[in-house]
Amino acid sequence: MIGIICPSRFEYKALDRKKLCRKGVTLICSGMGKLRAATACFRLLKACPDLRFILLIGFAGGLTKNLKIGDVVEPRLFIEQDYNAEPFEKFPNSIRR
Image 1 (tube, rainbow, N blue to C red):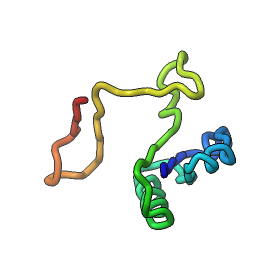
Image 2: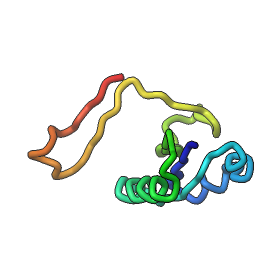
Image 3: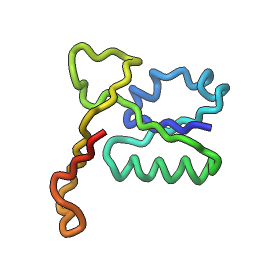
């Protein structure tokens, strides 16, 4: 089973929820921000403990004009930027693929 987290209602409504549910996908609209995404992830795992994957989908602020609905973006470098996270981690924290 797969869980999908959508940050906005626009993204959530754009999905064919009936078709995805028939394929074993469960969906949740979280609202924007990492705390809301983490809460949605917790709710998904609590409701469906057999989830194997969780995807966070969205437009990420419209990364480029060439990005279309349905495109998949796979970053080479991910920079996690969290404010006031010291001394727990360095700022910014980068992860290479």
